[in-house]
Length: 80
Image 1 (cartoon, rainbow, N blue to C red):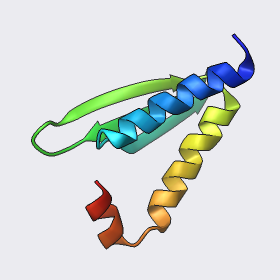
Image 2 (cartoon, rainbow, N blue to C red):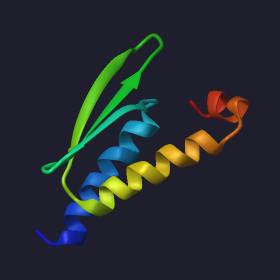
Image 3 (cartoon, one colour):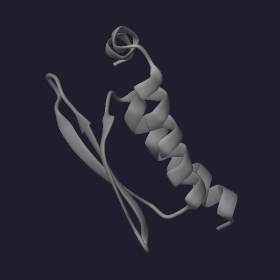
Image 4 (tube, rainbow, N blue to C red):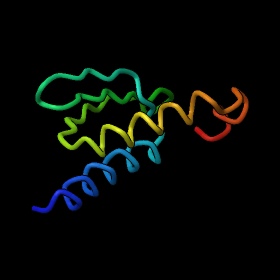
């Protein structure tokens, strides 16, 4: 599998979880990559953990996290 294909697959998994209402709760980095914990609250609560192996996917999740933190609180609540 090419590096781009691997990154694209991980990026799609991240984006799908975010579209389903999950939010990033925790990121743990080690030599094997990053484990990103997603949680969803509300009537259909849930938890998912993704193991990200590519550096580009780790950059993507960090960019998403920083983007959410820069949004005004009201906009974040309405987008979830």
